[in-house]
Image (tube, rainbow, N blue to C red; front, side, top):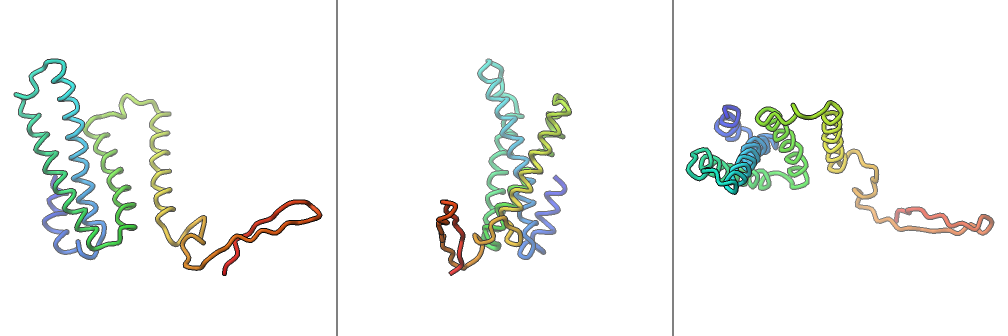
Length: 175
């Protein structure tokens, strides 16, 4: 919570217009609050249907208020980032930051990893790193497996049939 207040009160007014990570860090940290609130409300709704008195419990209402406030704040700062920075930069960075913060929050708050085996933890971490690498590769203009997708040149497919081998070979030709 102190990190969030520091980001909102000190860094956002000074560096938010020039650094994409400021607004997206605020969105990601707030997003962790919204995910945790939704998880808590899910438990409360499940308890409600088992006839437990969750509506009288103040924690339920705190979770509802936290969810509404965090979603409103998250949308506000995401819109600020989208107003200033390119969408193709905002969403990949936001996705990776948000996922990282939510996984970290789940590890700390819900202790979900305690019940997982070592193989499951390694698989989860490797899957997460694969997603981060994939988002980085897809959103990067400096490295691409298909560089012709990022260039402004027009390409055409030219096919030639080899009569001796009775095979057809096709190439992308720049026009």
